[in-house]
Image (cartoon, rainbow, N blue to C red; front, side, top):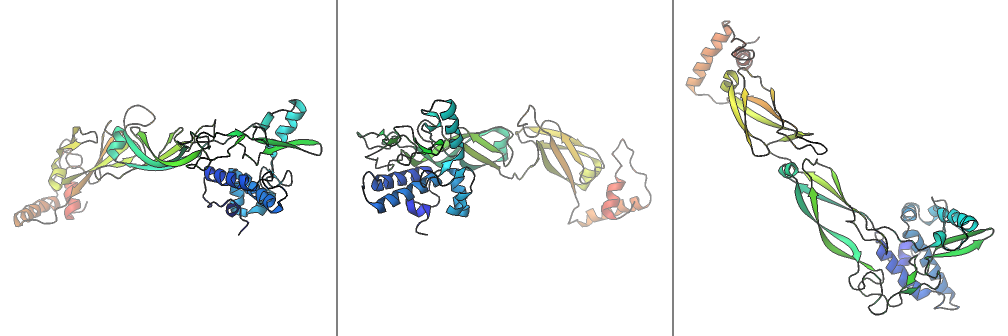
Length: 381
C-alpha cells in the first residue's frame, strides 16, 4: 500500500526508533508548511508523515497498527482519534493536562519533553557443564544502538548544533483547546525532542544514534542452570537524551556432558561392573566434576540399577550455600563373549545354584551371590 505508514516514512517494517526519527525529521524539514507556504500537497505529506511517526514511534500504537492497520487505531488502547490533526491524543496525557490546568496552574505540566528509554536486547551463550560448575566470563558480541560518535548524540553537523523547536518552544509538546478542555500531544515538528536540527549529522542522519558492533563480558555464576537468563542493566540500546539505556538479557545454554547428567543440583553418573565385581563387591575410584578423586565401596551382590550417593560432590547451589550430591548408578555388565574355560566355570557355578546351595550370609553381601547369578543364568527364584 502506497499510503502505508512505513512507506510514508520510507523505512522497513523492522525499523528502529532511531531510523524512524531520522526519516521523520527529513520529511518534516522538507514538507513543513512554514517552508512550503500555500502548497496543499506538501501540507498533506507533512500531515501523513506526522501521523505515521506518532503511531510507529509509540510501541503500543505500533503493535496495534502492525496487527490491524490504521483502522485498528480508531479504538486502540490509549488512542483517542479526531483531535489535533492526524497524530491522535494519548488519553493519559488528556487527563494529565486537565488536572494540570485545573489544579496546577497550566505551564509545562506533562507537556514537558519526554524521550523513551532504550530498547532491550536479547542474546544467547553456550557454556560447558564444567564452566557452569566453576563460573566463567563469556564474551558476547552484539550490535547496539549507541550515541553517535561524530556529533556526540546531538544529531547536528559539527559546528551547527541544535536549536529550540519554534513550534513547542522546547517543551516537546504542543497544547490546544478543544471545547472546554485544554489538551496536548507530542510536537510533530521536533518529534517530542524539544529541539530541531537544520544541518543533520551525516553519520546518524540527525537521529543522534548509530548502530555499532559491541562486546560485553558476561559473568556466568557457578551453578547456573540451562535456560537461565542473566540481565545486564544498561547493556541494551541507548535511549534518547536524558534517558537510560535498555537492558541486555542473556539466555545461558549448558552443553550436555558425556560423563554426567544433571538433576537440579545433583549429578548422576554410571559405573560399569562385571558380574564378578557385582557378585563379590569392589571399590570404585571416581573422578568428580571438580577433578577430585573419590572412592566408594560397592557391596557384594549389588543389583543392576542400584544407586549410591556421594555427598557434596554435585553442582554448586545457585541461590544458596553448599553443593548437590553425586549419584552413582551401577550397571552390571553380562559378558557377550566367553572363552571355553570361562563357560565351563560358569556352567559349574550355575549347577551349584540350581542344586540349592546356601546363599551367602548378609554379612558377605546384600542378598548374596545367588540372586545375581540366578538372574543372569536363568536359575529362577
